Image 1: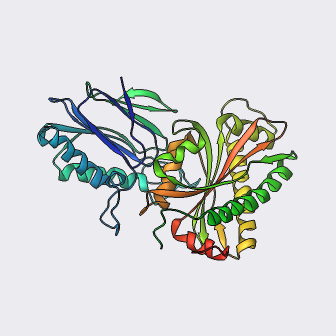
Image 2 (image 1 turned 120 degrees about the vertical axis):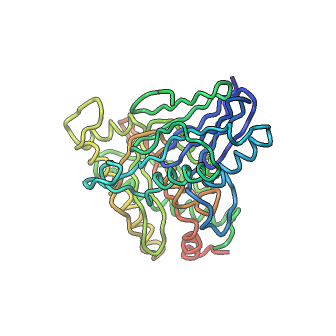
Image 3 (image 1 turned 90 degrees about the horizontal axis):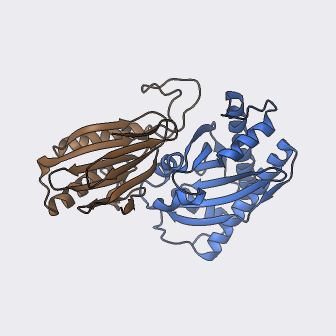
Length: 169
Length: 203
């Protein structure tokens, strides 16, 4: 099966039975959208929560709001119906902490880097709600990196990490 | 800030020199710490697309140890010491005599953290002296994970409005040991004009 690497700030939508993969998600969030009826799906590797504060919009794949919207539009062009699309998300970790303190997500130490992981998770969820897409599963937060693999032929999403190995989401 | 799709060869040379002087100073500090010779590669300075950054250290899924420091002061950015897992273990054993063999102990982790802090400190010191720009490193953060995961939040800070980052990178080897690491400086693109100005190579 052809594996498509969806890198930082990229997204990919297809109706071919590819395997889509985002490797080494840290604070970035992987968003998998799937239309089970038509076997159409897409994966985004977003790094920032939302594009609204940006003066220069640039690449839509970089932001949770624009990437999810772009994927949904592309899936609809391929024939998907909005109500058939389901979402799974993973990532949004806090990779570096200052030792000592405890933050809300029970990771030791306040998170370096503007709590970007948490904000990415929230922004992805908000974007999904606004587009009326159901979030069916998530593996988010924590303090470890994840790789997300998404099999378009059957919709299976696998999350693997150095700490916990691989498991289906 | 200027929209920067490219830097001139002269500017890249000047930034490489920044890497040279910074990592040279850091290597001296490291060499003193471990009492071994330290070899440096020729520094690389380049604008790297976001998707390609983790390729610099062998791919997004490569397990690495990363020590991260945020830089503030007259210019801002990030400094990262990256070590392959085996190198991190060996360096930790060099620093802390109680060899554990397996996973890094807390003491070994903090020894590595301190190493990162000292290397970044001497790197930035040399830079400050050369340019007159005040650069202050933060408390070091420590992570052991996939390279992509360690690098991505650094990109967040520096790439809010751009799709590439400036990377100044040096590889070092500690002689008599199989220890190889990367010392990477990611200046914020907004600070680039300040640095280039002080180096006398602004547009």
